[in-house]
Image (cartoon, each protein chain N blue to C red):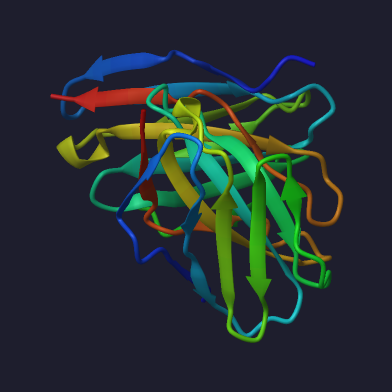
Length: 118
Length: 113
């Protein structure tokens, strides 16, 4: 079974600065998907960024980018120019690629609570 | 497109009762998944439905069940509620292509007294 570990329960960053959230995972599969979701106090889970394991290029979405190290099974999220609205719980998630459609579940880490200081 | 909707948003029940939660996926999405979120256990997968069939099931007791209708709307039911069932229940939908992202609803917060 796959596992996802987020070793930083809490992180803080100054507004306009850069912060990196860590995520490691364990899997024996060679093809899979990784995600970062954000959950603000409203509790709505919002997709931040997604990475396909077969792609060597790191995904980017505006101020959000990832550092995907497949051999090390590491998937960190970098937030540049942090804004007050970035304050939230961030979850790293793993999903298998199963062409038979039998394994579409997401496996989540425990989350990292990000505080943004003005 | 409208997002994933869940009803009700909040619910208070007592031990022993049963509850039904509803989820309407994004239009065109055929896969619906359910997750339970608690402070102690984090986010745990409950089950996933596609074309009215349960394809995946997490490690939860048989008191937790679900179904999907022909319009892809889904319901989950919890019978004989226990205090430990208090949680945020999240529904997510996705199209049914390889590796598609799951989009989440706002959740239903269930409190069992």
